[in-house]
Length: 169
Image (cartoon, rainbow, N blue to C red):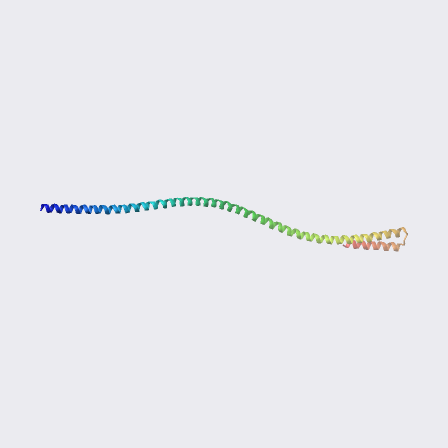
């Protein structure tokens, strides 16, 4: 019995050793699979981290570019506002100058009309003065030739008529 017990004990020890060996092999396989999976995941993590780092640098560069663009946009917006105000001022001045031009054109037209009218009157006066000069010369000739009083009176009346015509313009 003791021998049976020893054999049973040996069988139990062998079974335990086999179970322990099987468990060790099973855990060794699981450990290898887990370690390979960990190494692969860690490698992927490093790649992802490297990609994220380069993407982060790219994003920082984009943010910097955007900040520069924003500053340029603000400067350009300021310049646009200044130029818009200048344009409004120039447009106001242009409207004022155009109004003055329109008024001056009206004055010029009125003056041109007055000039034409005055020139016409001047030409009439020159004609009348020429006629009067001729009549004065004839009166002088009549006086020098000792013409009668009626002839002299007619010459004086003709001169008076021409003078009245001259005054009427």
